[in-house]
Length: 434
Ligand code: NAD
Image (cartoon, rainbow, N blue to C red):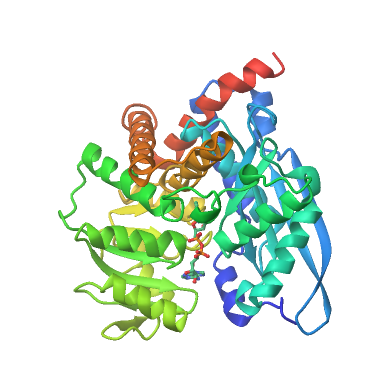
């Protein structure tokens, strides 16, 4: 069966056999007492507002009918639909679960609040393995998923975007299918992360990595950590977030000492040639076997000698087992939920700074927001404007986070949650129960 879970995927997934939603709730509970959030509001934030699960049939290339599960979770929207849509990516992965999507949707609410964006949090997924599907089958699955979502997405309702296993082609199909069912009117703002030629924003494809770079540079400027001018960086995951970050870091002259993907990992203490590694990945579909590199395991990659570790794959890779052995001084979480609460505690005690996901990878949703603004106004921002605006959002919100971190809540993830909760309280209270 094409959507079966391969051994490799099982192993990938086994790194996070815990429940990311429960983990996320435990951080919320620890952050809440540092804020004036009323108990009813905390209860609201602990529950998604809507979970849509659909089982839909798709005709595969060989004529068989196969069923797929599509999920869309709306978490909370302090502004409510109509004024501002829910926002969050769509993941295609063979082992994605409802609880994982619930966690990802909750993080989107918090992330939008950290960035001060007028959006609610959502996330979606289709249980499938894009690596085992033809281009045509992917298109059929996407179009059927959009029809199953029906009126639950829309420019003022809920606006998807790319995540693991999806890309701008998938976003283009979503836009087209949605438009076909709305009097054929092209509805650009039903989705972000579209191709630039089809109403996408310049800079969206690289936004998560670029935003992460801005956060990191600002943090280094503010905290003056003891790391070299040209730090050594190890990156877990070599997809949209990881590979683009490698490119930006290499442009800064930083040394990329190791990189992993779902097939394995490679390292080179003197630094990997990132453009050549990207070309190798495009050709062979993996970083494994890159000429001049040393093969290491995905687990070894996380504990390589380096200054900055960048998890950019899936949840739960930094655990209580490997946290004591991580050599990096800074962890930049481009992935969502890569660090378990136990690992967080160990790393905090060891003085390793974790720049948390809801800040570190918020560049993606920020440029998605820019794409929405452009789509709604038929506007076209040039690349420099996108980059300048992104730099502004990342800098000001890194400063807001750092202020809480250095004056009130000396735990990086908790400080980001506190920032998010404090920004959610006001609009929710104004609309809410008191
Ligand atoms: P992607 O599908 O483009 O890339 C994922 C990468 O992770 C691939 O290279 C894959 O091979 C690798 N991977 C999977 N399992 C692995 C393992 N066990 N060890 C090492 N590598 C492994 O996805 P992406 O868009 O780059 O997303 C990566 C992370 O960043 C996710 O957590 C996602 O939620 C988060 N994120 C992405 C965006 C975005 O705009 N794309 C925005 C915010 C956050």
